[in-house]
Image 1 (cartoon, chains in turn cyan, green):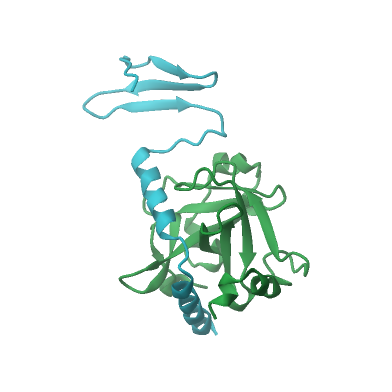
Image 2: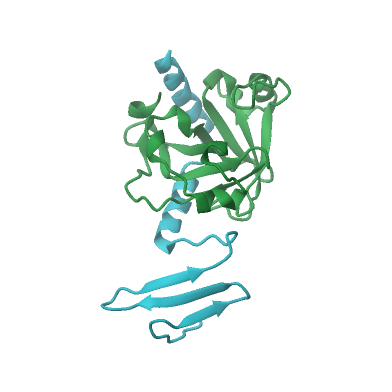
Length: 77
Length: 156
């Protein structure tokens, strides 16, 4: 892992079009500004990991799902 | 009953005239490109959405390249939590949507094994530009949106 030391207000450039700026680092928490093209998804790592887990646990188990759906559709009518 | 979800032939028959796809009897499924993939399945970008006519309003999102990547989804408009799920403009622009009402928004469903209920991930909706056939999975900043929203209390 590349480790760079930066002060508040200083930036790191990644490629041609991504700039990460350290905005504030008062007490343990660091505020970071990221400027990147719209087509570059940016997420907090732990949130992204959680959504990955949720997606994997949503993969269809057909027996289970079909029984479940029948219940919901019947329930509506 | 399982075959209606599993078998492509049955699925195609069931999908004819789906309301989701504009009532066009020829539109049995829609192919959508997800340029970023989905979290957890980043390398897969080609998907199709199929409506399950016998189980309306439920649909299936399935990878064209890996059929085992298959998820049950539902349009957010069928859930009472709909109004709380707001897709920011900057997210909509990722699939070239300028107005919120032009976006087709789905939620991914799963089975909660403790309650034996279907739940919806309201924090990470699928946002689709149907005209451009492009979509992505947004991750919303609103941490109060539940990852497991029970359909038992929220289906319109």
